[in-house]
Amino acid sequence: MEIDGIEIDAARQQQAREYARKRRRISYIDMAIAAAGIILILGAGLDRWLRNLQQSAVGGVPILGWQPHPGWYPLQILITFLILMIGYQLLTLPLSYYGFTLSRRYGLSTMSLKGWIMDLLKGFVLGLVFEGVVIMLIYALLAYQPQWWWLWVAIVLLFFSVIMANLAPVLIFPLFYKFTPLPEGELTERLMALVARANTKVRGVFTMHLSNKTTAANAALMGLGNTRRIVLGDTMTDRYTVEEIEVVLAHELGHHVHHDIWKLLISQSILMLGGLFVANLILHWVVEGLHLYTSLTDPATLPFLFLLMGLFGLIVMPISNSYSRRVEYQADEYALQSTQKVAAFKSAMTRLANQNLAEIEPSPLVELLFHSHPSIRKRLQHADEFASRGELAATPSVQP
Ligand SMILES: [Zn+2]
Image (tube, rainbow, N blue to C red; front, side, top):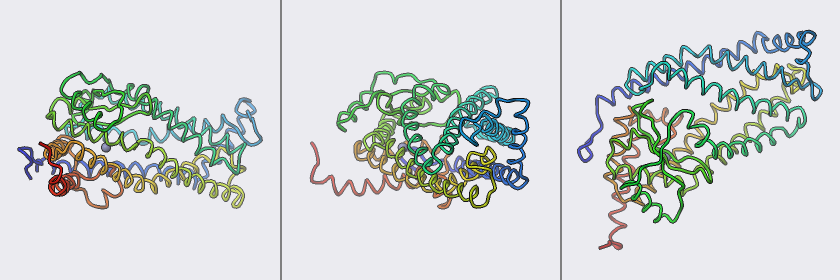
C-alpha cells in the first residue's frame, strides 16, 4: 500500500503483530496474578487474619486502635492498603521488567535500566499517594455516610479529576518528560491559522521531549482551563513534513473544539457512579447479609473492594474504549475538514504505523476491547471516504 512515496512497511507490520501479541500476553498475566492474589487472600481468609493481627497489636501499638468513628480504624486501613499495593508491585516486578526489555528489543524504548527504574518508582509513589487518598476517603465516607457514601465518592472524584486534569500538565507530566514551547516558525503559524479559523483559543503548543525515552511519536491535547495546551512529541517534529504535523495539530485542535476532555471526564464519572452504586449494594450484602466482615469499614473488606474495582475496570474498559474511538474518529473528521489535506493525513498515519510499530489491522475483538483509537487501517479508510465525499461537496464552493 503506497501513499505518496510512504508505504506501510510489511516487515515492520510483521514485528508489530508479534509485539502486540507479546504485550497483550503481559497484560493477561498481570491480570491473572492480581486475580489469583485476591482469590488466595479471600479464600484463605488472609484479609481477616491481617485485621485480627492488627487488632491484637493495638495493645503494644495503641495508635493502631485510633478510631475516629466506631469501627473505623484509618491506620489499619492504610497499612492494609500499603501491604496490598507493595505486594502486587513486587509480584509483578519481573513482568514489568520483561515488558521493558521487550520494548527495548523491538527498538521502541530508548531508556536505560536506571531511567526505567526511576520512572517505575515515580509512578509507583504517585499511584500510592493518589490511590491512598481515594481509599482513605472511601472508608471515611463509609463510616459517616453508609447509605450515600457512593454518591459522595463519585462527586468528590469528579472534582478531584477536574483539578488533576488542570494540574497534570504542569505538575505530573513534567516529572516524566521535559516540555519546551514549540519554537516560532512555519508550524506555529499554521496552527494559529487553524485556531483562528476555528474561532477558538489555545493557550500554548509545546514540544514534549520523548526521544530520550522512546522512538515512538505522539501528540496530545492536555489540561483544562488555564493549562490547556497541545503537545507534540519531538519524535514527530523532527521527522514529519510540515503538512503532516499540521494535520496532527488539527486533530488535537478537534479534541479542543469538541470539548473532549470534559466529555471524557463526565462520561468516566457517570460510569464510576454506576460502579460505586453496585459496589454499595454488594458491600451491604456481604457485611449485613452474609456477615463476612464485622462492618462496612472493617479493614478486612479492602481486598474484596479491590476485587470489585478490578471487575469494574474489566467491564468498563470496552465501553470507555469504544466511546474514545468515536471521539477519535470525530477528531480525525475535524482534521480532514479543517485542513482538507487527505494525502498529508494518510502519510502521517502511515508514518505513525511504521514508527510506533502499530498493528494497522488488529483483530476486531482486540480492537473492541483494548484500543482507544480506531485502527490505522480504519483511519486511512476514513480519509479515503472523506476524499470521495469531499469531491462531491466541494463542487459548488470551489474557491479561486
Ligand atoms: Zn486524538
